[in-house]
Image 1 (tube, rainbow, N blue to C red):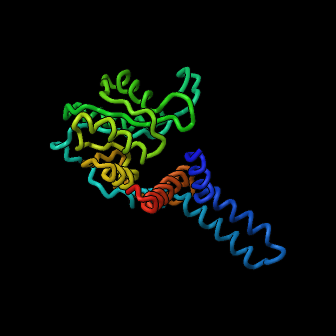
Image 2: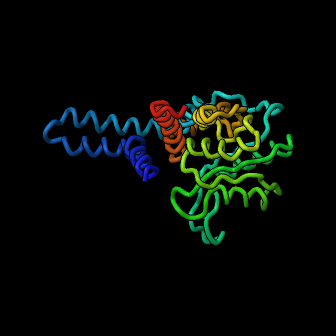
Length: 248
């Protein structure tokens, strides 16, 4: 229930729903307060257009990418990979399968494993029901990358639980120094949360947006730009929320 409430709250705070609500409010109040209502409507439309530009979305994501892309792996004892989402009930796979963000993280973790020989822990639960994300991640590592993870943490529902439950698994094994694999824009919150849980974290971010060259089409509104902006704003909101809750 907490996961559902958190996601409902973020949906109303983030675009596009927040901006659509602003537009609806402006249109609904146009007869009583025409000028303020018109200003609110145009402001929402302008913000929606701006946040839909891929250049803006990329810039917002890059603002979160504060860690270098090459991790310091010499002192790490294990690799921890965070899940990035699941597609439910896909007919071509006969059930649940992993979203592209999760596969991107697994691919990089496999590369790090082959370079370092470090054991791998995958972490992710089932907040929406179905098969636990970590179970799907472990299967993908074995089937698609030829790597068997040593640990599977399948009960967590968010980044804070990823950290706490991973700590419960790795601490008895004497492991406290980890290579943490997630997307660059997620790494600030993830690294801080895992450090709060007691780990020494060596960030291993993947799929950086920071060096993407500007193109003309990046200045035109597109669904991809809005998704990037939403992801970045969600992460900034998450950083604030975790700080208020004392999770980082």
